[in-house]
Length: 132
Image (cartoon, one colour):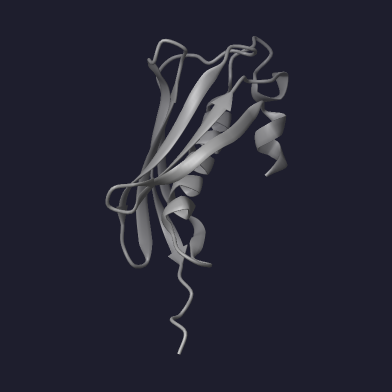
């Protein structure tokens, strides 16, 4: 998704922990495109990066050609401002993986580890039929 780079973010890690629960991380230094005229990141941009983090985390945990098909539901909260040029970190994690849906959460944190924004979401999965 080119827009992720255009807003100043870059996904830099992904993997699977313990019970096949995926995770994904990104570094993000918001660009002017991500911000309002006062230099504060718009809530919709927070939603964009949080949605991507959750999708990447789920896809990290899926085998073969299985992938997320779409976001069914998402709740986003912004708690502190993120500002143009100030680096933050992003992490998405799978909470539960079922056959047809996955549940995930993600957070944006400032340099001191405080939550800037967070989200939870439910995602429709596409599973390849078993070979046979």
